Image (tube, rainbow, N blue to C red; front, side, top):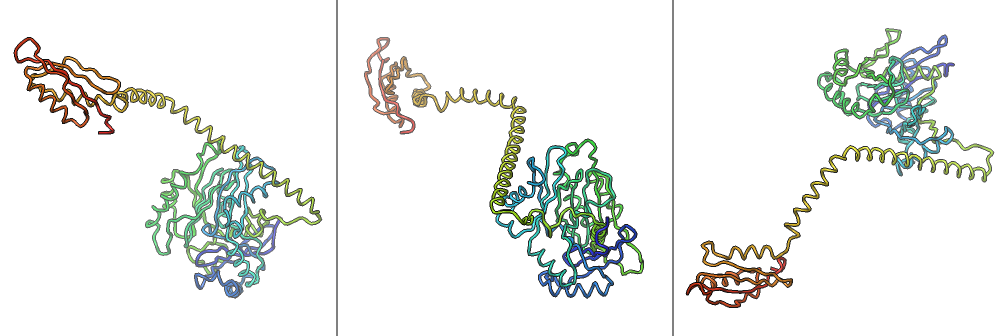
Length: 476
């Protein structure tokens, strides 16, 4: 069933607005005319009344006669995020997502218009694509259209129209849209859009593709590397790159991107319609995006995202009493709370399972680490846990001369760290020298000579005894 008999699609860009008008003819949509309206100044969108009047004159001069329009936004204007959803019925889904929007965007959510696109959850893992745009931008666009004599039927990201266009049989498609003001990308798998974002690789008019194709390929490669593996999307989830070029890419560039990304690539372009004598568009105008939006609108195709008519802001139903309203709100809050708890539980369970798998894989490393800790702990007994007087006894051994003129025959250590030393020497002077060296050691205190006496073996050989206290190493 066809929608409006005639409609114009306006694809917004930084420096221009591409307008394409489509009409319903013999049960199908046909493009009637197209034109590009250059914005006189960068801040024209902030003056919607003046911009709308200028747009109205331009459309009239170009022969546009539609009174209704759809507006397409570039990916750089919107914010898109994918959220995992707990099990919930369709009736409770908008309320649940409205609460998740508050948590996702914080205090800024009041200044945003947000709509969503939820997948069917056939694999048990349901998710939703949230798309948000500043309310001020939408208000300015609506005021511009009103000044131009147009009624806005909807506002949607242009990339989503291209992502859903025919031309690929792959279950998983990566859509690249290249135009004069930039580039944007979307990813859809099994009918569910999981990514929508602008690309930072510059696309400048008059610049050859060879100068920026490498940067574009590198950024695309990083995007592809973060996508879910093909095996997780189903056995038949083949992946393909769709390139909607409205600037200067050709078949050679397509082949290079295909090789660098490891994906089959298709170069897509919306064919220029008749009449051929219509004024051609500037290379880089978003003709394909506007044409597909216009054909979808005149053909009655529902917009996947409509920021002007968000499903997250449902109208209040008439005829409900205050008690019924409070009861419904309480029930919805309970459903949302339970859903969020289930979502958190599921997320924690997935993380716990992953950590358990990692721990099981580290079993060998853990065993080896425990062996190392055990050995190190045993070795530490000889260092930081050994008796403090061992260093002092080492100093004592070093106090004896190497020539063997004096030697120890006994050493005793008491609990109060009092050490008794006995020995023999070839002369009394050797004993006195040892006594002086011990008194000079800062780790010893109260060094005393107990006795020096002749040993009986020779006239000069003597026996001796002395004592001292070992100080704590921390008190030296």
